[in-house]
Amino acid sequence: MEKQSIQSKKAEIKFREKLTRRQVNGEEVLGRRLDPKGIIDLLTKRMEKTYWQMVTLKKKGVTLSPYIEIGAERGQRALVMENDLNAPGFAVDISFHSLKSCDYYKKVFGKQENPFRICCDANFLPFKTNSIPFIFCYETLHHFPNHIPIVKEVYRVLSPGGNFFFDEEPFKQHLKFPLYKRHTCSVSYHSKKSIFRIIVDRIFLKIYCEEEDYGIVENNDIEINTWRKSLEKFQKKDVKLRSWVIIKIESDLFNPGKNPLFYIINYMLGGNVKGFCQKSGSLPTKKLSMSDVLICPSCLKLGKESDLLKSNHKYVCQSCGKQYPSKENVLFLLPYDEMRELYPSFPS
Ligand SMILES: [Zn+2]
Image 1 (cartoon, rainbow, N blue to C red):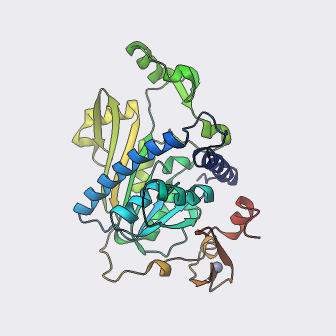
Image 2 (image 1 turned 135 degrees about the vertical axis):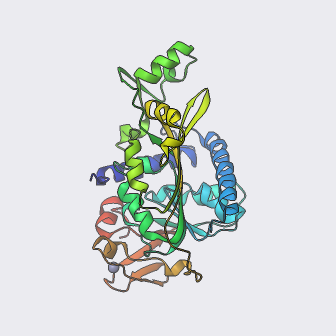
Image 3 (image 1 turned 30 degrees about the vertical axis):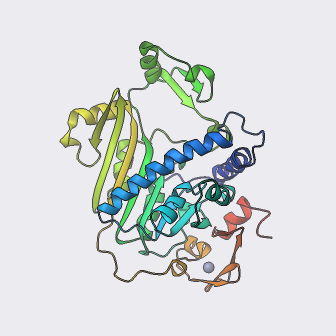
């Protein structure tokens, strides 16, 4: 099973550091990306969408707190959880700079509370087994060469009866014969096209984006079967495949027979997958406190779960003695070997 390489983790960190410099500090880097104003408009839309999706889940009886948001980036969605839904939890990401920028966006959006921010690797979520009732992510799982180990980690950490929600992930388009390539930033990609051109591009054009130039994984060809395999362990599954052809074509990943024609169209055209999955069992009546659910990522990598004890601005492993520092309110919980590779200047 292909795991995310250290190079692509480094690429994520480097790219997001530059993106923060552009979108928070207004520096002249990554000139093709949205500027500070543009990104605020985009984040506003994302936050609204998250708010309404979470309200819907809450109405279904989902316990929203404590949550973990994986690939939380700037923390915009976690800010909605904390401030508009009264649901404290954890925003985790491998990019320290993205997580740090949450302070800036908190002010921009007039919010009061920050999420508990952790810089960690989704392959080794530093949380106890069966400890968290709700985990979610958006536009995250396709940044791994294979998302199966990530979903496995999610499943491990979820409480019995806990829920996993994800949205805005791609699945493979089979009716595709790439003959030419265009960058998503290129003018010809965005120029106005005739219907004929739209159809031809849809079938023969391979698009790629700036992240790939940096070495970030953009896995847009995830097979429908891989999605099914990654989620099959969950007891309840409501996972929808969606393609857009003037109208929305939607079918059910785990029940394709419900609408076989739409399922075939989805298979041919690719699109987005969105899911809501529940682990078997029922939620424990007693919740663990947020500081009691954290464990040592270095020990976890060796297959054991060791408690962390907070002392000043550090968390110390009660088994191996390793120390995990906080910097600007972001806690670093990466396995030590990765921490040295990914953030060589920190901790000293
Ligand atoms: Zn340890």
